[in-house]
Image (cartoon, rainbow, N blue to C red; front, side, top):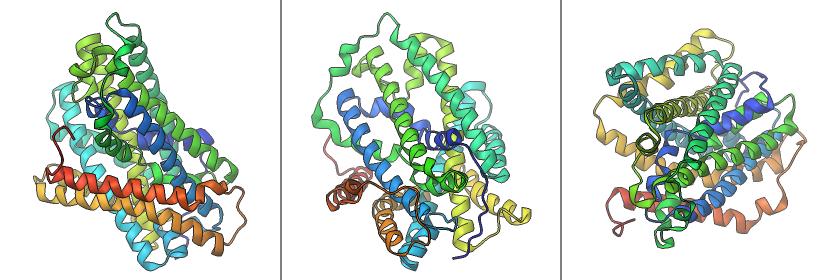
Length: 400
């Protein structure tokens, strides 16, 4: 596969922000509700476990990129080290997950803009679409800088909300011990889908190719910050109102308890979270298309514009098409593409260690590629897929 992507430098903190921004979608505001029966401690347990195994799979990809002279995306790395079938499987995984996420962000942004400003949902989605697609069109450098500034603003907003919650009179940290570990399985499945930044590792590697030794540090830092932010929201919401009064969206809890300013700030945070996640996932989808079909998106404005249109326009149309069956199909395909993501990175690093064309500045610790660790990763992701299918078909026990 030809190398069609050129180097565009980003800084270490821009790489970190890309990971945080991609992971922190609007779903962070629904974590508390998902843990309303299990409680905070099982949620915290899964945030740690899934965070570690996701970081390990990201580091698999990181080492493979460092062993490869060309700047290739996941589908390109799979083509080089796993073969044609693995490459198409990975490309299908990227495509399905990206479409599902971008459709959700197009629809969700319209809902949020309506809540905040009272405007028509379709108009709200179009207003969201303009900066979302524009940054994709401008390339990796613009994406890295935008992620850094918006993610920094998101962190500041979240810290204000959390800080106000922690000092609120009705906050009681003993509520964090409520709940039952019997309901921990549904929480696990949600957490698996929250950590979703594996796809952008090759993009960060391309941006940090001038300082490749910083790539694993950026991944670990970004994932740790993601964990901290995701853990803080349910800590605040549950300690504020207790498990019995957790709403589906954390903005409602904050708005009811802290006042209208908290409602607007939390909804603003959610909007920014959708935007940064859109950039990360959409940017990865765009470069995977370029890599898979050898498109010169960095050198030809017409080609880049058409590729951005392919990435950005279908989700906008599908969000308001009423094609529920198509969205359900995406759901099931996305579940199995998660399993693909648990298998292929391990095969990629194995192949790269045998056929890589450059000496890496960093390699995974031996324990990361141990058979027991890989087996655990595969089993957890497979269990998540089975659970998601059963949940969609209403075949789970009550409360799950």
